Image (cartoon, rainbow, N blue to C red; front, side, top):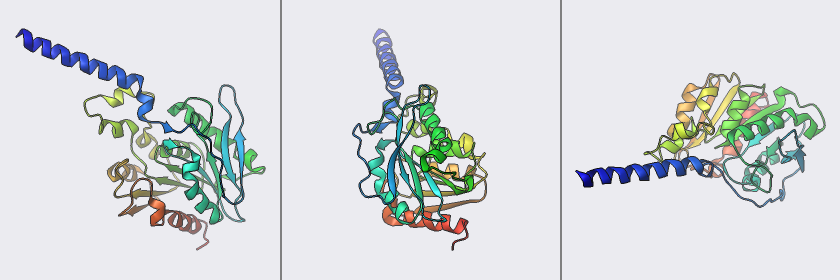
Length: 273
């Protein structure tokens, strides 16, 4: 009996250490940014501008691409890894199709100051939306603003779109809840209780969006499974559209025509097709 109790005690100690370790390092399970800053290489009509400091909010880099006449501006929110430079190919494709782009670097990554948190990144997303006129030097009407979120950025995009006006919302590899994603990987820990401040609970906000939504997902996505995106799609209001790429993974939808599908979707909404 004594050996049995010792064994249980050892298991409890190990479990307690795992709980404490996850709680302390929980941000490291989410954010995988690189420290180096790499400016845009060959994006047309693009300048690097900055969101100014605001109270305790950091100054952040924004890639600003002028739209061609009649084209909307896409507010782009990247995923949880790398930096804006990783996303330059898809941003360049959108720019080559005439769209404007405002792509915000995240605090704590790509040479930007600050520490990434859900609350902080969302405040930055609000700052980008509110500061769009200043970045472009003229008024950008709500009907000319498209909010686009990829991976982690879908959490910022969904919440922002639920609170502001926009032409459309584009979601690539979205998910219902960050803590649910991690729970499937760390099954022995109560991740949703431990991540009270990093939940990215997209399911909470998706029903408040009354604009047209386009969902994009790869059927072979092992980072954010298609099932996580389907839960979100089912909860969204009409009008909504979904494009599933049978051979697509998490980072390669561009190979299967995602940028072209986005362009056709937005052009159709504007009556250009």
